[in-house]
Every structure is written in structure tokens, then in C-alpha cells.
Amino acid sequence: MTPIYYIQFEDKNIDEGNSISTLAGIKNNFSGKKEAIVFSNHANEVKNKYAQSGIKTTIYQNNHYELIDFADVLSKLKELFVNKKEYLVVLDNDNLGDSFGSRLAALLGTVFVADAQKFSEDNQVIVDKNIGETQAFRRIPLEKKAIITIACNGVLKKENSEINIIDWKIKNKENSTYIPEENSTNDLAYAKIIVAGGKGLGSAESFKPLKKLSGKLNASVGASKAVTDQGWVNSKRMIGISNLTVSPDVYYAFGISGAVQHTIGMNKSKCIVAVNTDKSAPIFKLADYGIVGDANLVIEQLNNLL
Amino acid sequence: MKIAVIAKAEINNPKTYTVHKNKVTYHPENLFLSEEDKSVLEYAVQLVELKGGTIDVYTFEEGEVADRVLHEALALGADTATKIEAGDLNDPLQQNYLACKYMHFLKEQEKNYDLLLTGGTAISEATAVIAQKLGMTYYDHITMIDTSFNFEMKLEKGKITGKCKLPAVVSTLNAINVPRLADFVALSNALASNITSVSFKGQHKHMKSVVNVVNGKKEKIIFNLNDDPQATQKLVDALKQNGILR
Image (tube, rainbow over all chains, first blue to last red; front, top):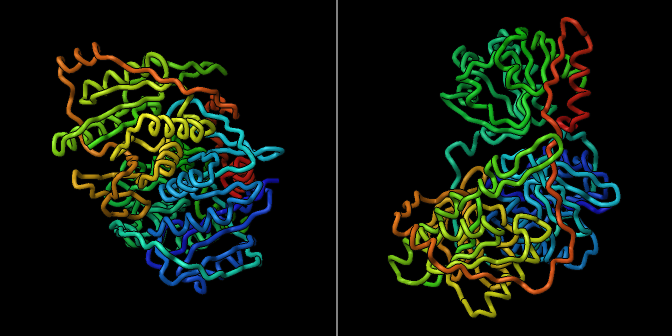
């Protein structure tokens, strides 16, 4: 089995490039030997997160590290991988992952596949990559050394793992600046998994089990306008035309009928799971999976099952 | 300024490949110069208008698509057009090889570009390789670049801003401006212009990826809790089976 190396970035000032959900997805999706490689400026604060991931982790620590220090990270990664005979380096499927992946592949002279969709790893790792918006995809058999970006989510079960913290020197500080977006502190805007509740949940109290479920799924909690208007949930968590537009990998809609004012804010989700008592509710037209039934009961059952 | 543009067709167009049963059909007649590449060409034209210089356009597209893309680029302001017949730059397994060959070609021709531009990020590895081998600085996922070379690179929750160090390879994330339309005279002249063909010696010996069909239309999986008390368990099983929940 090809060993898997997952690259993460932990800059205490810039919340990008560190997805615990992807870490869990990699742990559960790939069968080979796995290791996380983390570049950080606050290793002592993040080490517990990785110590409970079940994946051996090496943290390269420098107090002056910033996410924009691309050259130093790439230089370190080159040093780590240049003499390895076999590896699959995995990065998050986002702009940062793509950028690092392509640069590292260029340095190492290996294949880079951005936005890999599916993979299989019997004797050889094979990934699929969709061709734009067409109904076709490329099937790409990877060589022994390859770099991919992939979106895979999972729920992390607490499991102790080996953590190594290594001091690391930074030589080339980049002459550029990171500017966060207006919504950058709102976890919901960038969540990979969202559990959203609608008026069908009935009361503010019903959002407590939903929050418990969000913890089990590594998800962020969202709501429809009907809910935030009632004051059951903070208005910053409203998904729809009047506030946030989201595009997570998985969107769970509980007690949401699917009015267009709401769906316009979530219809780009990759997978939609809907639960509603009304089988003719518009949300089921968008849903990939669903249950016709009481959302509160389904949330309770999911909390027991997961 | 010496500027090169790697031009590509609009591969993301859903009409590029059509699917019937298990057969994929490729439609070159639907392929034109991509919006992102039109946009970087417009940027190159603005730079040349301001600082003087030349714009050379290259494409790795094949046959009639290459001719169409290059004619469009010439009509939009490129000075020379070159068709490179070497392989499929959209195939991740060929990108490294093609980028190395292209880099050698540029070195042999002593092109020494100040700026190499390409729109979209579909060929990101190729552009990263070209930048690395030619010792040029690499900027990708660019959403803004001005004629003073100030740039913005888009990340998920913010952006990196700075000033490009030339010589540089710049790959944009999407259209960075609204390109001017070519007039009829430019189109007519472009159609009469010469397109240079270059083929790299040797063949790519490594594996190639295969274009395949996405299996069928996704079916909805909806359970009814009123009829089936095990509906939630079945939903969890279905989500786990299809990799949605792990």
C-alpha cells in the first residue's frame, strides 16, 4: 500500500488549510500507512487535536511561521520527499491545496491531480477527475509518487496517536500580506458539512440536539430565515438570499421546506440530505438523500446512531 | 516587455463531451478560446499598450481547435501564434512531460519572456513546472493583477496581496477583466495570418488518463419514517455506503 502523507497548515492568525474533517476523511478512506505533516506557529496549542486523531503527526514548529511563507514550506517538503520511493501526498481540495500541490509536484517532478473525486487503491492508486461540467471524467492511474487534492469528510473517533514536534528554521519571509474576507470568522460560511434547522423543528430548544449532532459530524449549524426571525438562532447563521450563501460537501436540512429564498443560499452543496414531514416539500427536489418524517425524531435517532 | 500566453479552449463547457449510453463523444466544434484566456490576453494587450513589447501566443490544443483558438488570440491582439503538437495538456499524467519539453523549446529559442500568462488553473502543474524550470516566480489563483504588477491571490477565507517579481508565470483563477471584442478587420486579418506549428521530438512514454462516462444519473434515496421505523438506520447505512458519512 502506498503511504499517505496529509499536509496541514496551522497559522494561529490565519484560519486556512487545517481541516479536522478532511483528516478524519483520510483516516477512514485510505487504507495505507498514514502520516500528517503540519506546519505551525503554535504547536503546543494544536498538538492535542492531532494527538487524538489516530494518525501519526509531525509538526514543524516556528514561532515566526506564517501561512504565506510558501517557499520555506516547499523547501522542507522537498527535503522530506525527494528520496522517498513511494508516496501519495494529499492536500485539501481548495485554492491553498491546489497551489501547494502544483508547486510541490513541480519541485519533485511528480504527477499532480487537482480535485480528485474518487479513488481506489488495490495494487495501484487510481483517481477520477471530473471534466468541468461535462458528463465525462478522466480515470488517472497514479504512479508510485503522486500528489493529489481531494475533498473527503469524516467523523473523527478519538484515538491516541504519536506526535513529534520539530523546530524548523524559516529563511525566506515572503513580501506579501494576507487579508481575511469579511465572513472569515464565521465558521458556517466555509464549513464542509452543515446541519441546518428550519421552522419545522418547532422551538429554540430543538436546536440543542441539532448542535449535539453537529459536534458528532464535525459540522457547523445553520438555519433558515424563519428560525432566525424567531430569534431561536443568531441571525449570522441564516443561510439564504438575505445572508450567507454556502457550498459545503454535505448539507443536512432538518425541518426546512425549501423555499427559494433559502435554497438559493445552499443549492450548490455537493450532497443534500433532507428531513421533512411533508413529502411534497420543495427541499426533496434538491435532495440526494432524505427521510419523510419528524425532523426532531430523526435528529434524536442520528445522535444515538452516530 | 516580452509576454507569452498559453491559450486553451473552454474545456469546462458541458458541450465539450456528450454522453450517450456508455459512449463519450468529443465535440471540437464547440470549443473556442476560454474566457479566462481572453481575459489574460486583454491584460497582456494593456501592458503592451503601456510599456511596449510583443505578445506570443501558444496552444497545446489539437487540430481545428488549435487553429480557432489561435485565430481568436491573434484577433484580440497577439503578435504571433504557435501551435504545439505534442500531447494533451489537460491530462495530468502528461503535464509534467509537456511542460519540460515546452521549457526546453523556450530556452532553445532564447525567448526570455518577462511574463508568461495563462487563464484558469486547469493546467496548474504545467505552469508551476515551467516557472520552476525557467527560474521564474510563480503566481497562481490570481483574481486581480494591474499594470504595476500588484496582485491578489484568492484563498478560501481571504486573499494574499503583493507585488509580482518579474520574470513571472501568472495563472489566473477566473476572468480578471472584461476583454475588448475583436473588430471585423482584426478577425479578417487574423484568419489570414500565419500559424506556426511546432512538434516536440520523442513521444510521451508514460501512462495516459482515459476519458470515461460518469455512471448514470444519480438516483434520490428517500426513506419514509412513517412506513419504516428503520428509516434513519437505513439512511445512515446509505450515507456510509456511498462515502458521504464515515
